[in-house]
Every structure is written in C-alpha cells, then in structure tokens.
Image (cartoon, rainbow, N blue to C red; front, side, top):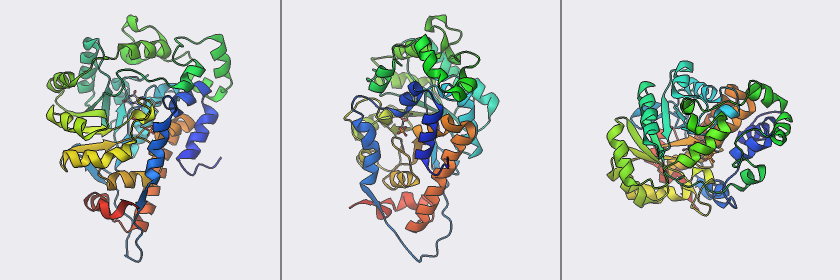
Amino acid sequence: MAIVNIDDLRVAAGRRLPKIFFDYIDGGSFAEETHSRNRTDFSALRLRQSVLGEHGEPDLSTSYLGRDYPLPFMFGPVGFLGLYARDGEQKAAKAAHAAGIPFALSTFSIASLADIRRATNGPLHFQLYVLEDRSLCDELIASAIEAGVDTLYVTVDTAITAIRERDVRNGFRSLTRVTPRMFLNLARKPGWLLDVAARGMPGVRAVEHRPEFGKGALEQAANLSRGIDKKLSWKDIAWLRERWMGKLVIKGVLSGEDAVKAREVGADGVVISNHGGRQLDGATSTIAALPGIRAAVGTDFTLMLDGGIRRGTDIIKAIGQGADGVMLGRAYTYGLAANGEQGAAEAISILAREMSISMSLMGVNSITELKERGAEFVFRE
Ligand SMILES: Cc1cc2nc3c(=O)[nH]c(=O)nc-3n(C[C@H](O)[C@H](O)[C@H](O)COP(=O)(O)O)c2cc1C
C-alpha cells in the first residue's frame, strides 16, 4: 500500500496492530466530540495564497524552550510505545533524533530513560505523571537528571482517567493479564505477535523493581493509573519547581487563566492540550483555545500545542495563530505501529514536506516570518 499521508499510516497501523491496541491509540473519551473537534477546528482556518513572489524553499527551522531545532514540531509523550513495536520508544526516539527534533518519553513507557540514552543521543524530554507515591517521582526525576533530560512536562489533565468507550468494549482497562480470549485476538495479527510478544508481554522498566505495581505492562499500567495523584494542585507544581532545575512545562492547559497561573508558579511554558480528546469530552479544541491563551500570556511565554495534528498545514495554522512549537501524538504513533522506526521517520518527512510545499504556495519564507506575521497568513473567514 502506498503511504502518501498520515491517514495512510493510520490505516497501515490498523492492519498490523491487534484491535485492542489500535483502538487504544485511535480513540477518544465518551462521544469523542472533542477528539473530532481537534481536527475540524483546523478546517475553520484559512491560509493566504500568494503568487509570483520569487520564493525559494522555506526555512522550517525555529527555536523553542531555549533551543534551536530544524523543524517546528517534536514527538510528544505517548504511553506504551513498546507495545506497538518492539523497542518502540527507542525506535521513535531514533527517528526523532535523526531529524534533529526532541523525543518526549512518557512516564508510562516500556523503556526507561537510560534505555533511550543507550540507543540514541539527541534531545530527550520527559513527561512526568505526579504519583501519590512521591518517592517514585523523586526516582523518576533523578533518572531524568542522569539521562541529561532538559525539559520536563508535568501532565495535569489526567487526575481522573475519562471513560474511553472503545477500551471498555475491548476490555482494555479491566485487563491485567493476557486471557485466552485476548490471546486469540492477538494471534490474529502474527506480524505484531512475532515482533512484540514472542518473548512474552513486555513490562514497564521504571517500576520493574517495585513488586507492588505487579508484573507485565497491562497490570503495571492499571496500577500506575490508579497511583496518579488525584488531588494535584498548583502547590505541587511549586514543589516540583524546587526539585527540577531544567525547563518545566505544564501539559494540559486550555485556558488563559491557567496559563497565567502556570507562569506565576515558575513554569517555563505550557502545552495547550486536551490529551488528544481522551479526557474531558466537550472541552474546546486546542487550536480554538490558542488565540485566547496567547492574548492572556503575551508574547514572551512558551506555548506548545498538540491535538489533531495530521497535516503540515495544521502545523502552519498553529504557529500562525501563536504557538511556538507543536507536538505530535497519534501522527508518529501510527507510523511507528505501521512500520517501526522507518514509519515514525515517514511521519516526520510527510509533515515536513507538506509544510514546505504549503508555505511556498503561501509565499512564506520561514517559520520566523510565520511567527512574526501570523495573522496575515492564517485567518478566519
Ligand atoms: C495512545 C496514547 C497514549 C498517550 N499517553 C500519554 C502519556 O502517557 N502522557 C501524556 O502526557 N500524554 C499522553 N497522551 C496524549 C499525547 O501526549 C497528546 O496530548 C495527544 O496525543 C495529542 O493529540 P493527537 O494524538 O491527536 O495529536 C497519549 C495519547 C495517545 C494517543
């Protein structure tokens, strides 16, 4: 099958992955309204076309969170990549680093930060879920320092996990070990089975030495989710700010008011995110929330955005509306699940190519120009 765009990678991922994992990646919460709005609200924005301006190939390089990167997007944190491809986290990190962009490892990962460091040397970020067991947080922070992580994302929109109805139907959430019925289900995808599960179900490395979390990724995931601190507050962010000297970014902000509070407690930026429509169904799309948040915080506070990025033009629109950089979630995960490191790399090249062509047609020479004069290039009709 020819892979032309991100949606093709999604279809290819669906062919290779067992349904239970494909649905976990692909789905949203409840009626999946916010999940679809993340996409449709991009369609409400228009791009200015400009001709005969003698424009060459646009410069896609930019900087955010204190560093320069060749592209304005990066790989955001996605849980359990190692269940979709063997050594999935390492493969995704290698693909990101080959393109010179950061990879953010999720707390809920098969590989540890040290595993990633052994595999590749590029810019490594870490996403932290604050757990009730603060000693585990301290361990994770220490391993982030050890691995040379420069940016920590604290995800704040998942104190309670929403109901993802596809997962309930597939028995994903209630499952702690592989049942015979599930085994039959998995065996229908022999390519995946041989790659990932032939040597038994992988486990979460970061809690391997903690028997209280159980054995194998499924049981550990259930216990880790239960262990997320449900009473997380701004005071805890201040507690973290004292422990973490690198860049601290709050992930899961959807209002100007919360972004201003994040800056007040000493965060270096926020990720405008609704967790890919996997949490509060009915919440606003991230692209619709962006202009109000930018207006509230002014120009000198870092705003990253994720949610529904499937096209190069989505990235152009997000930056034109005021984002400093963009995070991919499902877009690269589909690639990884479809074809390992090469598939994740393909997601990057598809999006970069789409951006480059579209910016040429818009007469925009660089991301710098797009950031400075965004309102001229991206607007509502
Ligand atoms: C399968 C899956 C697992 C995820 N796991 C995490 C996670 O462990 N930590 C986190 O902060 N966000 C997690 N997210 C949310 C992503 O970081 C991101 O906010 C979201 O995927 C963006 O939407 P998009 O996938 O439509 O681009 C996950 C998303 C998906 C699809």
